[in-house]
Length: 265
Image (cartoon, rainbow, N blue to C red; front, side, top):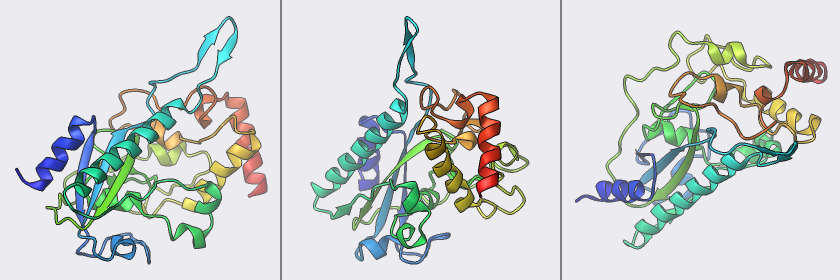
């Protein structure tokens, strides 16, 4: 049994979903200066990308005698903890075989995302997922996977192990003839005409994300419209709990938030 198969079997036994491998021995498309795996680990040969479904309606707010038992964000937190656990387990599996590994963290504050000087140091999980064949870039700037659509959590293991790359996905073009996310985006941060992800206005999206949290006193913690409306692999609704996403609040409140955002931006 080869090392690729060993890693795949181990990941699946732990309850993992989708796994891909990208070679570090080439230039990566879309990667920014300083974000190639070898900028982090010079001896890196392979990048393992792990994916699980996330943000589905597994944990919801319960009501008891008119009082809400609030579990907002529970699904997000559980899936984030699970993918991090899977990532460290796979990294440990390789370390026990004598390989060097690093596991970047897929987290940063919205303030850091909006600061180009800080953003450059964040490992490009979506680019790695694209290169490893986990999915392709959608018009909304997210990675669209065959199994989960855009509703996936990603983990990355950078290693000096020489593994067989899975390569990019071929013949998977989920955004052709689809403009649902662009039409649904409350701040029109998606231009559906350029090839993905060139039409995605990252700064406008993240400014709205940041605005939602501050203006609602964290009652709305994510916009998530593009997660919700994407038709690919949509078996259940995307949710983070009661009043946690933009679509979970009433229409009047949504309209006011959009109007106020346009006024201040």
